[in-house]
Length: 243
Ligand code: SAM
Image (cartoon, rainbow, N blue to C red; front, side, top):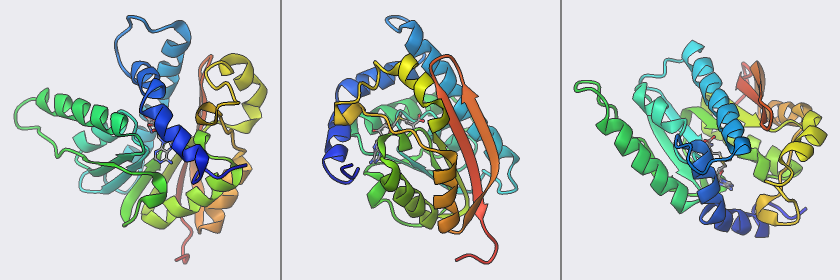
């Protein structure tokens, strides 16, 4: 398969700046006008993934307030904004300029809606792909992005994300065990032949292997499923003694 760093990536970027932007902004939004049943169901599933991520991070011994967080592939800011509101210092980046602009707009609105005295620091927003992320963060989070990466590219990306993380790495992905359910239920959202909308599901084993190769182990697992949405959520920590 062509690498996500090649033609696929350009197709994904173009998609999330156009049709994909409109579609996913609607799914991740709160308006109900013009949103169909499938989209509402995916909205619900994704919201559960965000909530589960936040609760794993709140329960972890690494305090969110003051932690540096990299939200890789931030979309419209569904996770980056609540993290910033909890006092984390957030870098939110996405390959799509349209997504980043929308996330920024939503963050400003959220900040403006805060009661006086509870203002938070705005996330730092950047238009950049996952491959070009650099630096070190206490926590790296990457939700529902690996679906755009073929198997080997996904494993390579996990090693890259792990290299940016000091204390926690949280990843969500569509699990391969639900391949046929997935095709049957959301096949039309991910029609396949188009590089931009092809969906790559991953086995838990592959994701764990990549984490282990990077010196990380999974300490916490979540599984979110609604009628049209499936995601596994892994929280990983560095294996003691690993670089
Ligand atoms: N993480 C967000 C969330 O859960 O709300 C957004 C998930 S959305 C399904 C996938 C996002 O990944 C899109 O915003 C898309 O632009 C972004 N994306 C896809 N490939 C990327 C890449 N190579 N680098 C950075 N972002 C990418």
